[in-house]
Length: 231
Image (cartoon, rainbow, N blue to C red):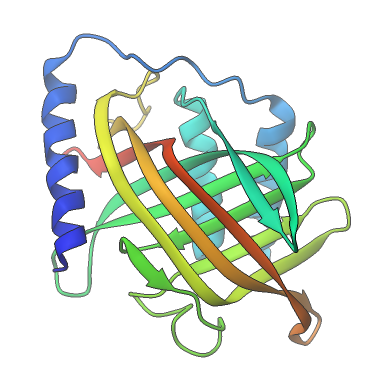
């Protein structure tokens, strides 16, 4: 287990203990609207139909975090030398890795526009990971990162084929303002530090093609959640 992963799990354990001892939430309810939830649901359904169940699941967890009362953080996202303002959350999920040890799967979900015009999604199982072509290693491996950017206006999907994703758990705290309806899940508020630097290629009918677009974002203290099984 890496030093970064050990630190993340230590923060997680401390946050879950603190959550059990505190009386009320400190994070204000989310102001995300129905348009955003509908956009996320549509992209998740498209991912599921295409067979990308992992991306669909990540989007669904992001929608749940918003319903659980997490307030998104404003970040700057640079796309092909243009800077845009996005709102973002990070969802961390504790799961067992191939070696049986707990791993924190962290997923960034960021969007812009009202109603949303674009969705950026990045998932990694470690503090630092590399993007790879979805069909050639890193993007599908347990230690690799996966990324996608969905242009909702032009209905284009771009996937990360190179670059890196650094997403570190910075803090955990109170229980989520709205408790999960599933009693088997425990949710606490959290913050993450993110550094995303990737090359994204347009997905066509025959796979990724065309000139890649560079997408970057660096932000500290991005609001999110950590979800852990109760037992």
